Image 1 (cartoon, rainbow, N blue to C red):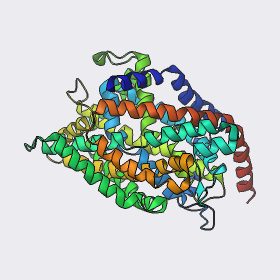
Image 2 (tube, helix red, strand yellow):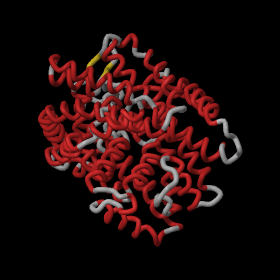
Image 3 (cartoon, helix red, strand yellow):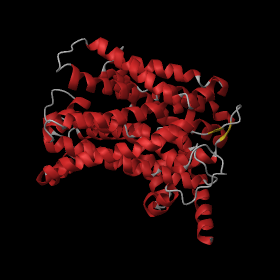
Image 4 (cartoon, rainbow, N blue to C red):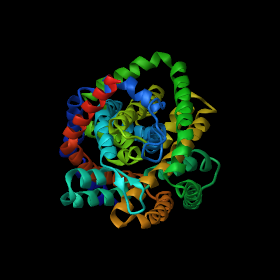
Amino acid sequence: MGRYIIEFTNIIWGLPLLILLIGGGIFFFFYSGLAPFRYFRHAFRILIGKYDDPDDPGDINHYEALSTALASTIGMGNISGVAIAIATGGPGAIFWMWISAFFGMATKFFSCSLAVMYRRKDENNELQGGPMYVITEGLGKNWRPLAIFFSLAGMIGVLPLFQVNQFTQAIRDIFLIPAGVDNVMGINMVMGLSLAAISALVIFGGIKRIGKVVGKLVPIMIAVYFIVVILILLLNSTDIIPAFRSIFQDAFTGNALLGGALGQLIITGVRRGTFSNEAGIGTAPMAHSAAKTNEPIREGLVAMLGPAIDTLLVCTLTALALIITGVWINPDTDGITLTAIAFEKALPGAGTYILMVCVLFFALTTLFAFPYYGTKCFAFVFGAKYKKLYNYIYLIGIFVSAVTSLNVLISFVDGVYALMAIPTMTSTLLLAPRVRKEFKKYFSKIKSH
């Protein structure tokens, strides 16, 4: 079964999907008039609350909406996902992760603006948004099968399979096995149950509780990780420029040590970049649709900051730590364990423990954010009154992913993400002219005040 999942994912992550994601991002980038870079300052002003109005429709403010989106993207993909990318594709894979984030900023601007434009109230009189509502409200009821397709894929795609698997691997490989504890299955089961219990305390409180919790945790986890990796870079400052040089050199040649062909290298980078920042997948629009605002463009501008923070900053820090320490060359392991080896090599005696603190924050914030997306997808298909049932499915998913193989899990998640991208990108491309029209109207209004 695992072999078929891996083969399916390798097939679907081919040239057509690459063109849809990167080609779509390039189109959005130029079609927006380079908005992701022209309006960075305005986006930060929105983020810090300059335009907040508590009477606007929505559940959480702009900052909490971005924090919720970042909680699901800044996770294990930024630590172990980068390690997997470099271990399988070499340093050049990071360049293509950057490309996915660079144009992904424009994709998020369009998709998240649409999520606010086409949100509506469900049968519980609660405001809902996301690609499924963009499809049905923006393209029409005849497109509902595509919306259901997204929702079904979304329910599976946001199960915390990769995050839990890598967290349990880190605890097991870094601490327990070296201490002589060899009951691997028993360890995984206990950790799976523990993570499920912790997650239940937060996720049953809904988006308002999730927004408040992750709003506090996200800046802390980014700051701690940033400080630690900067310290590693300062201790190895002479290796920084060679590290960047190896990224750019390998980006167009593939890495000889890994036997990488250029086409496969690009796919590896884009695949891991998309997993990291989720631009074009459809999860972020669900978080940003909950923002308190009457201006869709404002939330689109806030959303575009996500890939810059997630991939261009956090993933780059991880990549530099891996390349500078040299642990990526012919690794005996991959994922989170490889990153732990890099941290320990750079900061002997303390590196592993510091990384584990970061991993704890990264894993938990993702676990708290993902079920919100799943309940929205579940409610769209089965009705809002049943949406809390998804939380139980989610908690079971935490336990299952703690005891499953990494290779199968990551291929499974990648495959489902690819399925989610098809309806998300299709609807965003078709409705892009409406975002551009709203964009012009918004800034003409801003300039007149």
